[in-house]
Length: 345
Image (cartoon, rainbow, N blue to C red):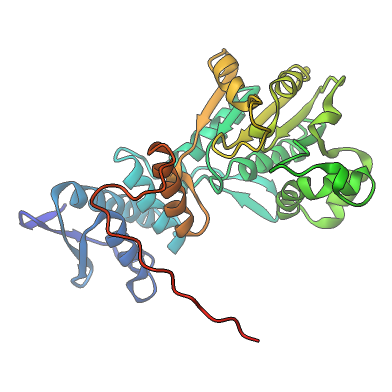
């Protein structure tokens, strides 16, 4: 029961079981709620006094009430759970936090469990479970590759597939393989490094090395997919915005029986030569609406890296929508003169 003391102030009771978690160390979680919903929060014993506009008060009340209910039922809650709950309710006022905080996580291994941190991440994981081909499109840091990798390893350990195949375009940002030192494997490994990084975060190194040696896990440039039929495999194509139209069509037609394909990329980061059509951009238009294929679009709200990354993604999005005009929008304050910092010698 919420007691309304003034039109802009509500008093929300907090149960004993959840007060320490909800408040956080030095009330850090309350400050997070303040920033997320633009409210002011004071404590009054086992209650919160919250002031702000009506919509902000309603969302703050929803977060606290749902978290309090979970705490009363004995669900352990961390400070990160509180911060995630605030982000989820800010994104969707009708969200049920149980779907995120109590639903069984993806368990790629005994050492790692992965939970979605946004509504789009939940839709993405559900789509991978239900559909044979999933297109995950959005900016860096939204978990597209990491979540796909978690699902791939979970499918492998549950014996739902026999192998994992991870592919990437081998040429990016204008670089040419011929100018890199070493043999072919040494040339392409730097481009495939992010896939290795995600994999080593899921499984211990010794097991990964065994699986790589046996060919149960294969990491290769997309060109190596030509002429193959991939049965009983979980296939991830990463950085797909840098595939050509021909490469994407070739990849999509490799899928065999009992297989899943997840294609990830950021269509604002295409590094193909000028005039070449991105295979991912074209695939979204050509096959994105076909039955059996799911398209999940991510945006800056799904960024799960440093909070500053969200601001950077938003800034670039505004820049792109202004037609790449470097001038600040009308009414914006002039940019400050650069500060020159002398180098240490």
